[in-house]
Length: 202
Ligand code: MN3
Image 1 (cartoon, rainbow, N blue to C red):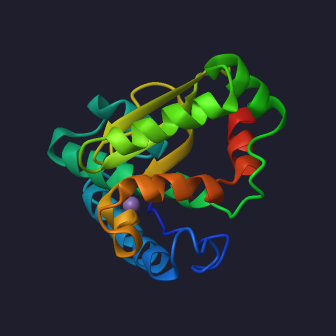
Image 2: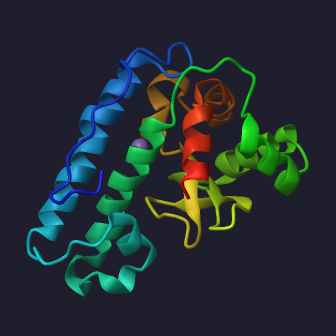
């Protein structure tokens, strides 16, 4: 995931695995066209600077480390690469029971309840104006917060453990203008075991 040059990671499930919540055509185009393009454009930008080997996420949170002439490209396409690597690996049709274990304990502690977390996360996703992302982020001590960002920007601080892509390319074929319906359906395709793994590995 962090090897230069970057490669498009294969999905750990089939393109139809998330139906009916996210349809096969959306998943196929999202992964093979959009995600692939971010990876290609990131590699093209970095081509001039073979000495750069930082973890991609470090560059994205500290853009002053990126040479100025490729900074915007790395923020946009490196962000697109990193964000989709996270997004596609935390998806799986779930049993509807939500998170368990240490993650559930932390969610209850930091948001009051799982329902309150869902409300905050969905509100962040629905109210992000234009293209962007909503996130569940942990700090190094395990404190959780919800935030949103525009474009392919990553959260300025903390470590993302869950993300929803609210660019229209993530839902428009199936949901058209109905972003709230996509955001609600997304609850059914969160791989909570994977999110907890990321929480514990922070
Ligand atoms: Mn996308």
